[in-house]
Image (cartoon, helix red, strand yellow):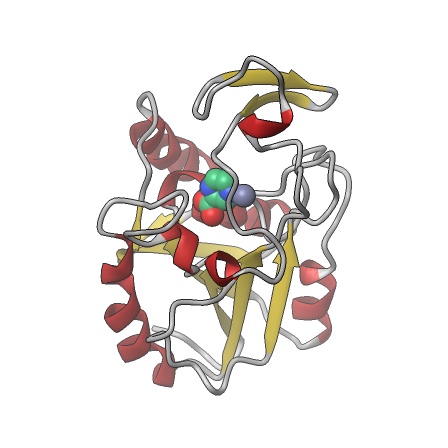
Length: 201
Ligand code: VGL
Ligand code: ZN
């Protein structure tokens, strides 16, 4: 149950991650009514948007000879290469039209540095550049986060694990998430989440 010190973080419920989008998560739009229904129980709600400049380094199209879903090595480590998605200001980067969260207090955008990906809403993939979300939550007296949205095995999982790393208690609400499941990434995400102390609701 949320307390007055719990924030719901709604991760990347954007057109490109829904059926018909550039990086569609299977059944991704199914999270929309589930999230709409839970939101009134929260005093604090934060949304995130994956928000890449054109030519972003996480796009396969930015790497000669590479195809989407292949791996590459970035200065900060291994990186999955994705189809072009969530380009700043495009319809694909917009929130799903049926997501209804008028009381959301903050929209945090991430992945806007052209050379660095950011699955986590707290910390970019270089693991040192912070987005400011932890400071925002802390200043508002929030101690706990519930994480929902897309995709379970990437942005949801990394956000929940970084929430714990930043000192918050964190839960992932499974019925309000859907995953990509690339090469066993769903099973790995759930075991990493458990090991990090994230609760699975
Ligand atoms: C995501 C892959 C690339 C996500 C974002 O929202 O899970 N996945 N960019
Ligand atoms: Zn992305």
